Image (cartoon, rainbow, N blue to C red; front, side):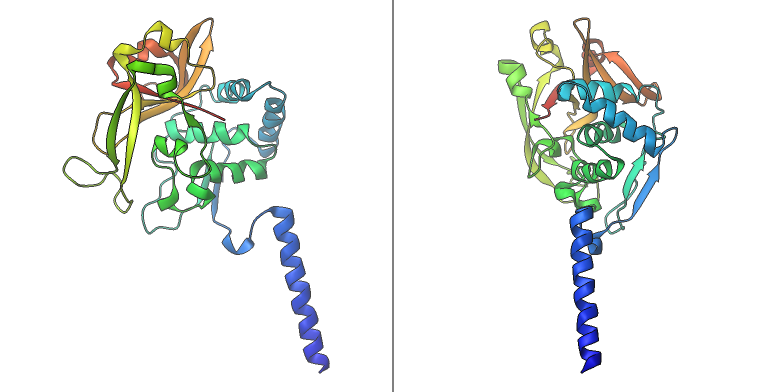
Length: 271
């Protein structure tokens, strides 16, 4: 009898301890996911200092401008997330190099965070549907940001473009020949609105705000965009702040000039 009572007591202690950890850390340890953290020239302390400085900025636009500026000059690095269908997904933080998607992931997650631990939690929610770190749940398409639960932003393309806006029905992930851009990922039917480049008039451009997340529309079947970046307005001129494969780093380019040979523009704005 004493042994039974002792075992029951130990069980109660374990349950109480588990509930305490869940309360403190805000997650179930049984669902913890593997992580890969590469800070490059950053340290955890310098990242937390950056978030403290960003918190003093007035409004999300100022925060995004401030945080995104700190990445200027960061080398372009493709496929830092890796992964594929059937593989164990890991939450990757790699600040040594970014591509156009990971760049906006990091900026948006930093904007919402006050500590390094919270940054990783927000990154999971920004990069993955429902924050579930699995390859199939990764927001592979830019329009995933404005669809489903826990949307990262709202689509203001038509609000800004007005009658100039075009809308195309797409089956994302399915190529013209019925193969897949990402084998193992389900297709999704979605209407994609964009402002054609030839209709990006000064009146349209003046409605784009600093901190808007921008997508370069792709006219290929199965894709919504071919590139992403952040709008930054300086002296009345709108720039695209992005991780460029051409220049091999994060930099600013005048948006109107950049869009001259591109099909069109999507505009998302944080809530």
